[in-house]
Length: 204
Image 1 (cartoon, helix red, strand yellow):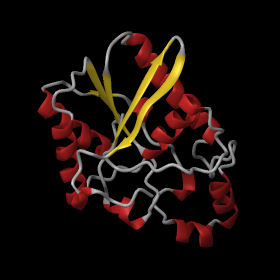
Image 2 (cartoon, one colour):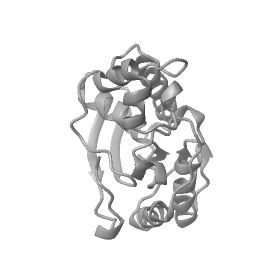
Image 3 (cartoon, one colour):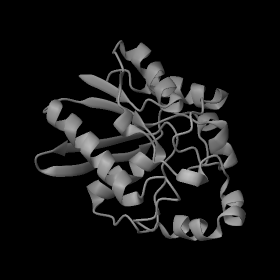
């Protein structure tokens, strides 16, 4: 699994959610470097969130791999309701109660018309387990989002949804999971060895 490359909103600490934001120049360079870093790996299939930032990242990899990327809307980022498009500082001022729920990772709070953490996790687990069942014994590339990878990490390690995030989810890093009848296993996390120092953004 690969998180999409950097966007301007990542830099601004602005919540993207389902809003379609393209990669910035650094993000496209990260996508190209990730594609180069995956040379030698064989993928039987490749899927991407249909949001532009993930799709652009996936297309860079697909061109280098010579593999078709299939759109998977189930791999979209969490819908953050009224928080989408705002920075955390703006949220703290405009929606202080929602900001408290955001910081606390309240599992059933949906930020006024968004997705609750519980519903988001259920969607992601169902989407990935469905793909795993379709590709038993195969290696599959997934390109998605930070929130999606957060859920996958927690699923594989048994970390509670409401527990604070004390692990980094860098843009364009490689994360390897095994998903099958025996459950989820985390094989490798946040590998950025394919990125040069100039392409590595803050892990937060």
